[in-house]
Length: 204
Image 1 (spheres, helix red, strand yellow):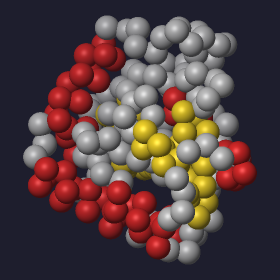
Image 2: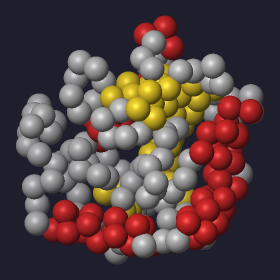
Image 3: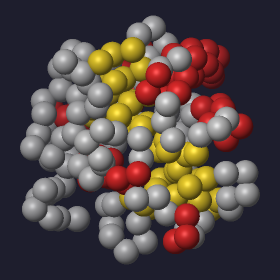
Image 4: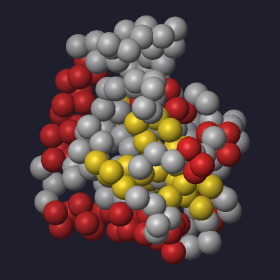
């Protein structure tokens, strides 16, 4: 179990949050391939209409899992555009932490312990978090205040606290991932926006 002063115990430790997480995961797992493709395409359109995305110089994206809103087309759009982007890597020396590495068509990829593709570590291309203008964030659930439930490992909560204050954080989600309320813990980091196929939610 990873411990430090900000995350003193396992994040999956309350009775309410794991149940909510399980229910929300089940909801997105029950979506058909066609539903996932349609909602992912609609989110892509909303995302690239945002001025925060259009003006960003460095965007941190991620490789989605099969049950998450699909980011393949988002990453391809970034790769073919004029903006730079980076992808997360499991930190090789600090369990529970992420590094972000610049990605382009020449980047070699490897499969990590969670079965997700990530860039093969190359220290020359690691991007300091302070240089990220927009971070796209995976999530299991969210509420209308842009509070987020993740998978429970705390990887993104530990990354978000080191971002430049001007960095914009954007969660990407299916409609079924919205919940009425999320109990906020001391380590939880809220998002600036959450985008679904129907709406762009902004933190209030």
